[in-house]
Image (cartoon, rainbow, N blue to C red; front, top):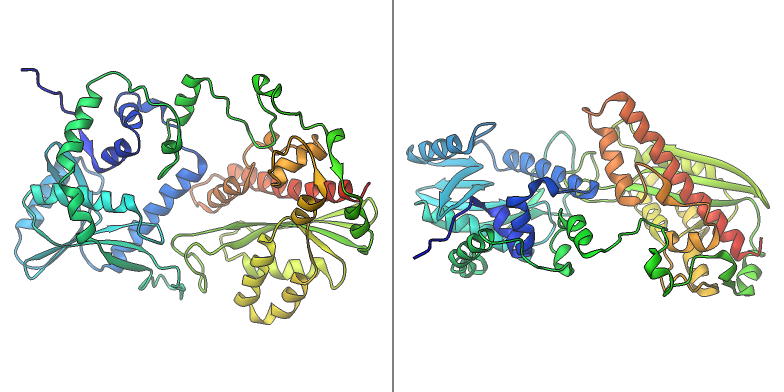
Length: 464
């Protein structure tokens, strides 16, 4: 009778297999093909920060296997559990049934065990239950009976008081009733994945599973296999698709004269404004909440009279809280009169939040909010182009109005997510000075391009 070859499985590999068997196969056999984008790397970094803070919040305990081989981590765990009395272990390591796991938090109180999986998410998700079920199945198989299973998520109502005091950052959700039924499926998952891994590359086509619950690091490889061409923002379709979709020729755009009529009523100076924001799972600055959108940069093109432009900008990469400086510089730049063009309501809500954060600046910030003009609404209501296909994002509209302004030609920062990743990189003490300056210039170039794009859109709608 043939025996199925077994492979080294872990929680992360099993969850990869549950997302897509092809992803698991490639992770084992072709790991060099993994490509993680800047946003995914930022999520990994956030998870690392959350784990480190969780160890402080849950209190004094023993960190298992720091910087040592997994075999030693297993021995350290066994030795710690053999000692009498209460204990708290971080990264307790277990092996059972060909699966190895490391637990975020394992507590023993009065002989009863509690396991907690710590997540950087703000709510319980289905894959969290899979994670804790795998952890619990392995730990119990290794001889540790678990009385309580929990998932700790970020509480977005928490406000950081400063001083590294993160008590209250997490809220713990009991999940035993939901996770234990999944444990019965794990032996079947393990057998199935070992069988899959012993065979050839699975013939699984790209689909929704490539992005749920996370973007697959092998998607570029799979799309290349299938002949899929991915387009950068603003890039026109490949040659095979051009026949089916109109090119972004500005001459094909149609503007409703009502747009020019409305714009003609607005005075000068006119301001064109764009914010860039950053979010932290673990708040960095006092008075802020987890995942709060915090303004660290803005760009503003000022049109003093028709066609006469000045450019103002703000960017703080010092590591200190940038929000107040951004608000004060913005108030000074925008003055008291003149329409302020934005694209959608993102800037409006950031202004509202800054007014709440700095009550002494609330009056001028609220006055600025009252001067906003939404170019997205104006464009959607009064502009048509066959290349848009119903999409009115700025990066879709811009090539149909001014193809010379293209975010795709930018190097380090091409969209809001990469701007956040770049800001994180600029704040990292390990980033070399020359690289930090490169990132800073890239952020300024990207944000400046966004507000110049607003100028071009407004001019097109106004008949200029």
